[in-house]
Image 1 (tube, rainbow over the protein chains, first blue to last red):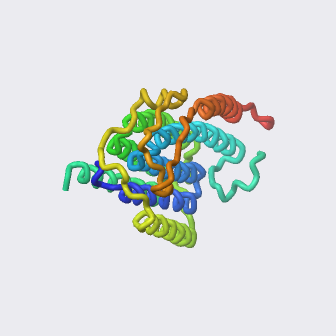
Image 2 (image 1 turned 90 degrees about the vertical axis):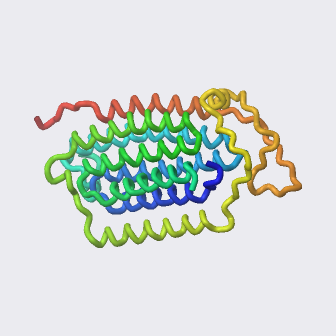
Image 3 (image 1 turned 45 degrees about the horizontal axis):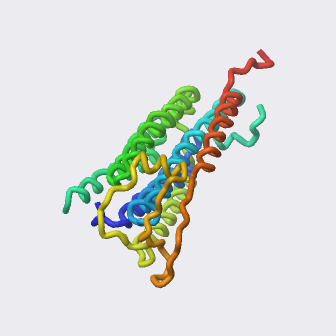
Length: 104
Length: 194
């Protein structure tokens, strides 16, 4: 594994990040936007673990922060979907272009 | 080409293709399925990197928890036309250009000369669940020979042992708050008009 080097992992992470940003830009469904956020978080997490592997000073830290990010992403998912469901109950749509007021 | 390189090539290609599928599919249900494959691919990449515990946590929490939440959200809100909300072509152009520019910038940086080289000739495994749990409690031993990237050779950078107990507690309290908040937000309301 060590002969592979760090750059391939950074490239994969950069690609995931770019896909996430594109997702944020082109999706009109609020859940699609949320999927873009998940992609971006995964890209950052991949960087954490890759640096934990290839930089001996961060062997523990990289994994610790990756775990914290995974847990916080789960919490963020719960709140985001609760807000989306609430918005859907009030407005009967999940189009982010129509979400200029949150109060129904 | 060794086995590790071949495995990484397969997993990385599958992950990247699924991530592209998330972006390009206009049907939100299909995007959720592509996201499932992307998350599994990222978990496999963690396993390839030797971080078994993080890979398992990714599979359990992300694939088993977060994605089920997303699918429930899709099922509860996807009604007819909402299932395939398409963006305007101009938005596709702008978003694609933005993403391509970001990817170019990050790829240039990753392949450039400033990326820290793999300073470790050995291939010893990453700390598993036991050392990670001890690190959360503060019983971590920092490798004395571990060099910090960016510190010149002559300078000895002493690292003090760090405990992650406070972040752990903050995250646990955060989870409790989020649980209550999500239950409050998503509760079944009686409509005033009905």
